[in-house]
Image (cartoon, rainbow, N blue to C red):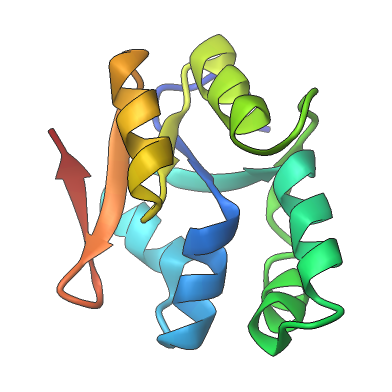
Length: 122
């Protein structure tokens, strides 16, 4: 159970949906970059809410239900940022605002560029 490792990346809602929309095996991509992938309870709750109107959110909820889900408090971006900071997780997200906030807090950030490749944001 990798809940305090620097080789763990927490996936946010948008990266999970993006990977489904673009048929990207985000778990394997993270492993290829030396990270195990986890998500948070707040991300899974957001996927549940979105799944009523968004087919990609519904598929994401099903596809990623086997990921380790770390309990977080609060909602949305604050929940994600608190978990990353407190547990030493990296963040994997294509959300520019969330990524910028994370980098300001000293959290390592990865995103998907060129449609498929995980890269570090600086």
